[in-house]
Length: 290
Image (cartoon, rainbow, N blue to C red; front, side, top):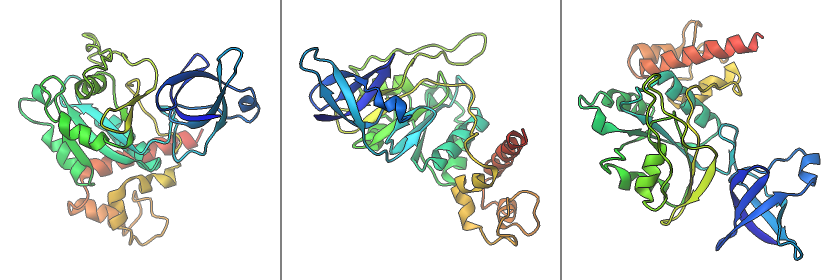
């Protein structure tokens, strides 16, 4: 029996890194009966048949974390990648990704790429909003190689996932960090001004300076339907400093004597963050009515 980590899964085959080589495996039938589906990032035990040389996954070890979008296990942190320009920052989409990462209990770093395209440096207002939470932020340009060393330091010796819309430069950043990687990159659509999906599947990539990173397909929309409406407030860490509301069950919406709303009015909580909370809260309430 050999132990390793699943780095990729395609068409019923799983590719398991056992240290020195990657072995192509299938999952034993018993997983289907137990409703267990191996995921990228899973630590597994495998065995190899002497007759055929075929590898089989015989055990999936307990997961420390499990993400549904993308489907990946045992992630420690998420690098949320957005572009300063081209495509324009979708603030609600960014907030939803942050909420989901908080819900999953992951460490969060926000990387603003393509800063070379924002000559007026308007992205700085986004950094101000993010650092009010506070979140760690990075400014990068994959083309000019700005901020690449800083990004590499955050990735070192951790298992990370890149997440963000299509076209923001996730694969370009990984290519800048690992020049021999040669991940396929794409251009924005002239019609929609959105990125094209160049990453077709989830894959765990080993870094030469320690750690692993998942490059994931981009997306143009993102919903946090897994979260209950009354759980959402716990996904905004800056709210925790203002929990002396009149009502213990305060949703920080229309209730009187709400400390969170008072903190927003006084500028202690960024208004854009609070506005996104209310918008997502109303979306979740609407979903639960049907």
